[in-house]
Image: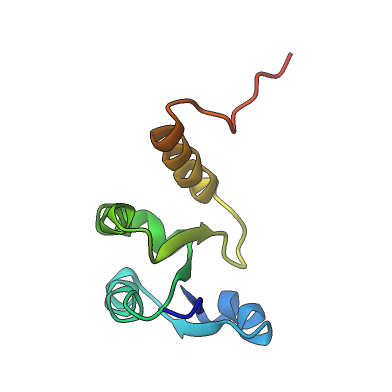
Length: 107
């Protein structure tokens, strides 16, 4: 792998990534996203995936936790964030470190 980045998501959400040189793979539903993830996982080290597609694929995405690459990062779409991406990162960090370092107690 050469450090390539890709994004899987709806067409409007991925356009800004295309402008930044990230390879884009449009997917309108979870079935298409799953097919694309299988295909691009062998070639890309970092794969961005929009929250709307990631949530229904959460069980499928666990397979990527076992290997160092690709890293699948869940991001908000153009419609805005639901908090799911943060939840995924928070859970991964808690598993890795044994403590939740992203939460903070507000006084």
